[in-house]
Image 1 (tube, one colour):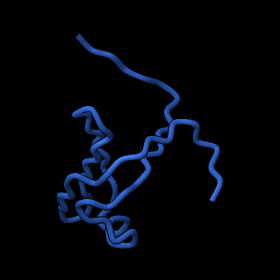
Image 2 (image 1 turned 60 degrees about the horizontal axis):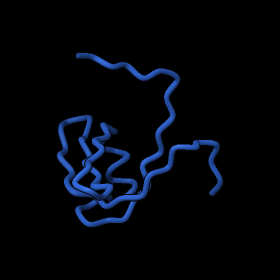
Image 3 (image 1 turned 180 degrees about the vertical axis):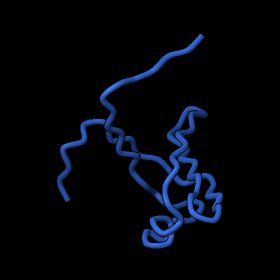
Length: 68
């Protein structure tokens, strides 16, 4: 599958925490860095995501906020 998303980061699922509707998926991307994605539980089930799965985090954002 080809995607227009330029920011594609490979990693491994470190943790999946399911709620009633949404789930937090933590992806270890190397160097001790982790990306956390919040997706629907349906999406987790459809993708059959589990700890250790190799995945690609696709990041597309029109803005980046920074706080201090």
